[in-house]
Image 1 (tube, rainbow, N blue to C red):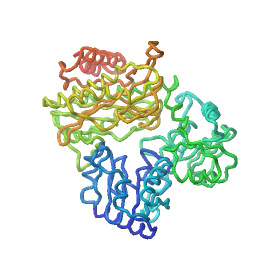
Image 2 (cartoon, rainbow, N blue to C red):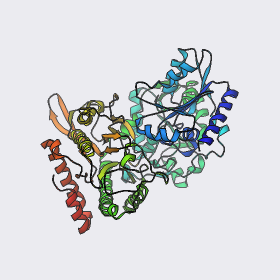
Image 3 (cartoon, helix red, strand yellow):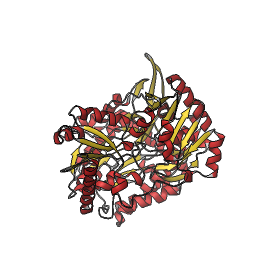
Image 4 (cartoon, rainbow, N blue to C red):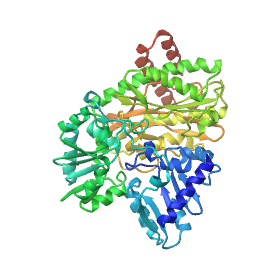
Length: 593
């Protein structure tokens, strides 16, 4: 494989010579700046062999490097071995930024190339400014993959389909009316939506263009009087065409967006700098007055309406039933032997697929046994598929797409005897998870202000994790969504009632073990208090937390009470949907500590 990677990099370098650039940058995104992308845009994976969801490749005539975050340090090191691509670990003090790397290697007057359709206007402008300080030019070029990627996958062709109002809670017409009201208050008469989840939410349309994310590759331009939808025509069924007509939405071929923007007249258009690609920005700037601001759809989408909240609870219930059946099966299956990381993934899929409204996984399951659990986004392959033994920890991070909600849950499960270090680490992570789950905070609080609650127990033992503690989750949409987050990095978006966020602290020790405990929480009112309203989290995930790794004396009485109350809720909610044998297993799993 790495011989193939070297040949691909050689082909790119030849293309760079013809384009007169000394370096080229390949991000992981598509023209919609998506986290997960359709095969057509998996250029960074194709050029490097690294399969993680986040990373950027930089190629010069002499060197090549991949920058990625802590979730993928171990995976990237393994996959890049022998490829000629060096690993640069983001967020570590010794790691140069991409611009520092380029400025150290290029001379004044030389050029760096990018495909402007897969760089955000924010990132392209930042990069251009930083390079200009060293008299290095940034050049927007055609996509080199069109030339060097032989047998490149086509653009997605699966049809879009309607998402019923009984699941969405509001009609497309209602959402467009709300959006236009937001546009009026912002002072623009048009908005371009590029983010696929925002478009899907606004139009109540779904698709299968991106693995595990039910979105449709498209653009949506909304003005005060009209709406224009840019999508490959073959993706439109008669039903969707009639739906668009009924909602006064005109559709156009997908790639016509650039020409359409250059021909707009007298338009004040809102573009979101981190969600709009630089090629779109360049086209719009020729004819429009651009206002750069966050998309109002991101916040509208993040705050669930009552119908969506009801659907989420129902989805969590069905998901919990499937997980209890799985955990009960796992407890007997591992000692009997013959189970591996991949076989239990298949079993979990089978049990979820039995549930009503199931539409697929919300991401590829992470089933990491022993040392594999230390690879934060590990995915088992036939070459790495580890047999499970009745000892140590299994980390299982999984989720499902149901028509009425999206789930995401991690459980670290003791398969047998544990070391004292494993028990200590497990209990510390549980403490952080519970302390965040119990938070009560005033309106206007940001996730970064709460992040310390989940980290303090391990900080006190000089440990940390470098991924975020919490991300937003879509409603039968992307499993990772904003605009809210809970992480060390500052994010100005405040937590609001109706937002659904993950709570997932972890700790990872290379070649030993990894631990993460994750539930989804709904932000809800907590009543009046000094200087205004207060909020809290309601844990909506329903699944027992393994108690076999807990050192009880390390928990406070308040933490013990929370865990016992959570388990009581899990039993009361799920037991009516289980048979007698499953009820008995769940009763034992939810037993007070």
